[in-house]
Amino acid sequence: MKKKTKKTKEKTISNIQVLKNCLFAVRELAVFSKLYIIVFPLLTLLYTVTSAFESTYYIKMIVSALENGEPFEKIALLIIIFIGLQFALMCVDWISSIWSDNIVENRFRESFNRRLFRKAANVELECYENPEFYDKYTRALSDTCSRIFDVFYNFVWIAFESIKVVYLIATMMAIDAGVGIFLVFPIIGNFLLGKWLNGIEQERYKENTRNTRIRDYVMRTLHLARYAKEIRLTSVYSLIQRQHAKSVDDTGAVYDKYAFKSGAVNWIKVQFTFTLIFEGLLVYCAYKALVHGTISLADMTVLTSVMSTATWGVINISDSILEIQNQCIYLQNAREFMSYKEKIPEDGDGIAVPEKIESIEFRNVTFTYKGETTPTLDGVSFALSPGEHVALVGRNGAGKSTLVKLLLRLYDPDSGEILLNGRNIKEYRVADYRRAFSTAFQDYQVLAMSLFENMTMGAKNEGDRRRAEKLLCKVGLSKKLESLDRGLDTVLTREFDDSGEVLSGGEAQKLAVARALMKKGAAYVFDEPSSALDPISEYELFNTVIDETAGATTMIISHRLSSAKLADRIIVLDGGKICESGTHSEMMRRRGLYYEMFVSQARNYLADDEIGGEAV
Image 1 (tube, rainbow, N blue to C red):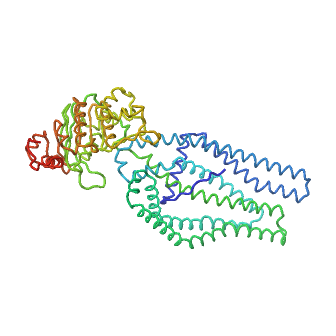
Image 2: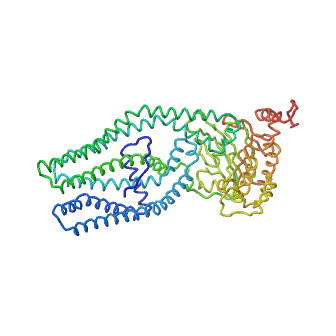
Image 3: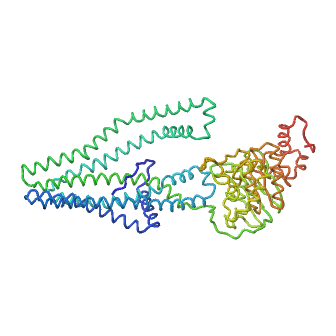
């Protein structure tokens, strides 16, 4: 009846946290199915009571019948009843396992994962960029549902098994109080020596953590597609192999280091847990029966049977306690993740977002990433007029992408405020506010869906297929579209479809731009949407963006200034501050940072070293 669970180890947590995580597991199951948390303990109780009865009264009945010379028919009937009882228990256990493993657990997994995914979609972007928090999230996904069931199984098992062990001990003491001495041995073997052995194994595990990490890295490197070209076109395989061989040797050295200590403690544990109990009890009972005549054959049989059952009960309780402690370490991550209070919740409430964006304004906005000491943005102030196209330019790390993240409320400023139509963006409903913007990021994603679904991105109004085709042609994907047998219904990537289409980097970037244009937002944001394109393709793409977003407030980030000059206004960021602002012509005349950057880039494409002024 007891569920077998996989042993796992990680850092330890306090007993209070273990108890809280047990209650978390029970509560999660109770929310899902109150019937299950009632029925499963009742089935476990039935199994436990029957097991205790078999090892005490039933065994004694059969042996007494043999001693008293009872008719064979009566003894046979007792044996048949015993076999029938065993068969009934097996059926109950089988039905319970099917119901629990194949029905309840699968449905619970689906329900809990939906909640987990909703939570993941609701937390702010900072959580994903915070390694510590992201680690909690990935661990929360690490088979949490099975761990919740494992904790519940073991929790119930410990409760009833403890009652059974107490009953068995009382039965033994009633027959002969002297056998109590033998009960000390499994306690020493499992709780004291077992804890010592577990501590040794944990030390060995911690010492091998780096070696395990290296082996896992090598395995990922050798089977992930993104490493395939480097492995085949260079001699790096020998270096990877050397890393793996060293980690294997180091692992062996660690095991050698703990081998004798671990083996010795384990040997002593086995002697206390099994040898001293069974052999010792057998000698003791034989002495009492043969020398003193104070124990009957039936009592001797019962004592050995009960001692065996009680010993395995103690072992099971010990194992279940250790298993709960190990599983609760992982549930700690899930519990902390599920109870996390979002700073910018996706489902956060607020006022309705206006259909038309009249103005966007940054007022003295300062922002510093967690763990950094220097502000990424420092006192930034500017405003966007309705329908204005603004290009944000600057060196790497100037704060351009961070500014966009703040505008889309993926982060909140440390100080200052961002206004939309004169109101702080924190006043608006978060999800509705973000949906007001059509965006294309430099770290765009092509999803394992059809081309059309990659255009609409799950919008309830899936849009017009003719408009999707038109936009794909406008961004430069007309030939690609014509080459696809299934057109817009072509599945992208080969994640789920072996015949899926794999786009090149430039094609994928054009798709990301077409996706943003397809949405028809109240405002548009393009963050480095053309970094994989050649200068001519980029210039053509920017012209398309300008045409398609006419009349809508648009912000474009670009490293190539030849394209940025198409914007109505250019804002130059440097060191987290705005250092220049104006049209291309105005800033070329000023000969400031923008001029230096523009001329430097122009020299990469033209042979003339005397570039400057209005000529460009």
